[in-house]
Length: 65
Image (cartoon, rainbow, N blue to C red):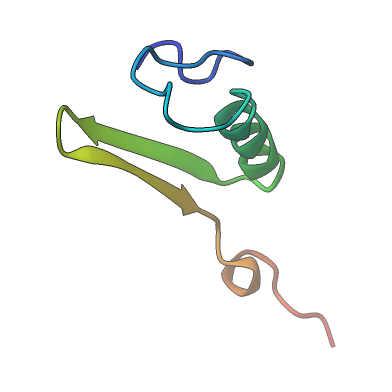
């Protein structure tokens, strides 16, 4: 899992799936630009879960009247 954010990296077990290995690195950069976090958890032979969390805009920016 230490290489999943390397652009163009593809794991050895992805031969049956199309792709170029740019999805997670690109997603992480976009999430970071919005002050969020990308959380990846993976369990062998069970699958991988990717969560994106963003700050609540309304709780961080008070409305001025």
